[in-house]
Length: 421
Image (cartoon, rainbow, N blue to C red; front, side, top):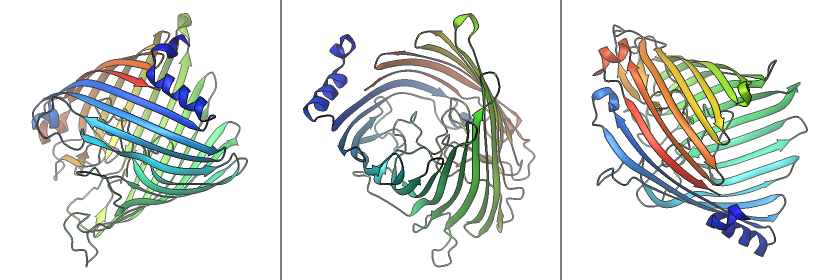
């Protein structure tokens, strides 16, 4: 009760819960972050220092144990950014979630509407919460839950930020199946998926005519994820995906791999977690050949921290080695150090950003393959419904960035506070 006495969200939620007999749930999030980014676009764009503010209010109605209706308003602002902040940081009060879900512990379940989603570890379909807006999806999904399996069919379409109301635009979508098999062997989890990424909006792909069909994207992704325990408080995760189909007029043949291992210790009674991982995504060896593409389509990932804390790169045409060390200094207080090393998979394909767009390219491959190394130090402190954090990151530009761009190493410094109930 003492914690709730100062907590307006908890008090309002408790009142609604009591008045509705447990059928109404209120959630509130307010986050403010100040950040400074220098060396943007590796020296091509001006430095940015701005505040970012995000407010969410959601209400969930549970008329029956197996039935849920939920809605969320999200308001994202960027005070100090300037007169015309981009839609990557600013979207005034809009509908972020509005969905129905009907599901029990076993048997058939379904959901339809707009909501945030994460599949697996979010490498292909996810909601990046570090973003001031975060992604949401217009979706329809149905599944059947067995004792040791969950078989799901899905159709999801990422919501495009528009002036005014963000109405559904289903010309870009992912559909298929994503299936889970917990405890497939011991305590190991297997996930298997077959997903189709379509894009058929008018002019939805680069340049071709709609009648000729060259402005369309139709990529099939077949993959799996396997995760579970190893000996002595260690865990592992593996994921692999292969692609075929077409991108515009080009035939698509691509692949991606991920492997990680993590270990937990308690030296001097302090929790210490160390993880190492490697990621690979193929690139196109001969970009001049318009009939073939081998650049992996990362679809709509939650990339924050997966390629460094600055979120500079994506899962396309890349080799990435990463380590993360987290030390709990006190209850709720953690210090983290992250290291990343980046190389191009194909020296003639582009380097891609976290959204999958090209940053720079050396068509002859003479700029080299080493992109650079990033170091990040960040800390968080959680107390009841409040979380505080700060961090600093710097990218040491490698040969490719020095030759293909202005070669400036970007840096990132921030401080934030979040209230969540």
